[in-house]
Length: 244
Image (tube, rainbow, N blue to C red; front, top):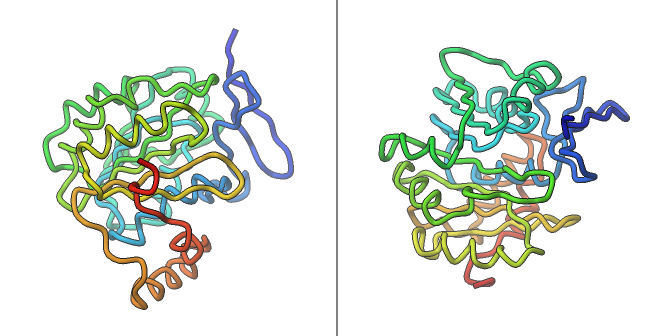
């Protein structure tokens, strides 16, 4: 019996993995919109880097981030590689949470995202997006030193690693320490307001200051362009050294 459950309410279609936890949500009338706060926050790297040319997505879920990227990153996005471990999630997403499968730009692979990234060439990715939990909140190899090292290797000089983590589990601090061994202090944390989600943004290069007037103007422009609160996010973003 499948643990995949779909509910619809108030125009939202939501996926669950056999528990009350929401795995992903899509507004039926606006499928490219990011409906969950933490998913919106995973676009925060736009404060520091331009729209990506190449993105590696670990975990498909309802395809919210890939749909958003295809709709909003425009012609700058040349390649979007999505790796999903479960065939039933891919089948359900194709049928119920449609993703534009543009053959020239989008590749959806059934496999282990931690293993697949090892086959990538060095310095070939601009963004790595990681949002991959099962119904019990487990991440597995996607929190391992080996995966983090392969992601670091695959990122270009100004590339960013972006992961959704939970701050209320014991492995949270350990995961940050593993990332810090690779990215040093070039890690920023964006905690959500209403949940325990923390978006972790790691870069090979130093982040620009969040305190400048130029950054505040940039955040304001992003807020107006994408209708998401970039201007409030820069007030919550903190360096990883505040935690570990």
